[in-house]
Image 1 (cartoon, rainbow, N blue to C red):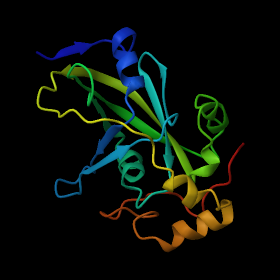
Image 2: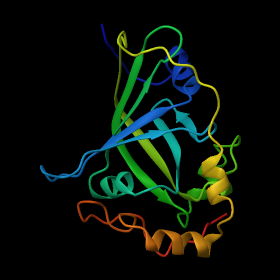
Image 3: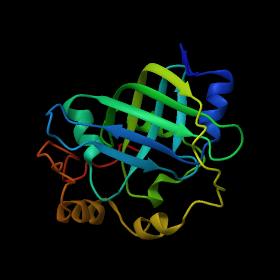
Length: 195
């Protein structure tokens, strides 16, 4: 049976921090809008900031749906599931925001990710999530799968970009500045980093 938690600590925090993969889900307010579900990985790009606050690094990607939805309504769900060990699924429902590179909080937030070099991945923002409902469930139907390693392709692709070329890359891509549903996405040109 699932359980509701008041905070992210102890065994729950350990489980979350040990998972090499998690998923984010967001949606616009419009009933016919596009629901977005994204996998997130890269060791060191996720952090539990405190018992009710989590954050992850938002890197260059195919679109900016999560950012657009957070800018519109802030709703987000994060999910982790055990692919090894005892079965478990943890969901954190809450409100989030994209802290962009020119935000005064950006530099301090980056210190919470000491095990990754964000310059290799086209860092766009830090997504900060404030937990409102924390629940787990059994995960009995989740298959066993082995984690081998992070792929190095993302870092190889975006390590060669600087602020100007990364901004130009984003400006050429569909659904970066504006979401699939026409919502404001990533501010372009890309704000300069405050670090």
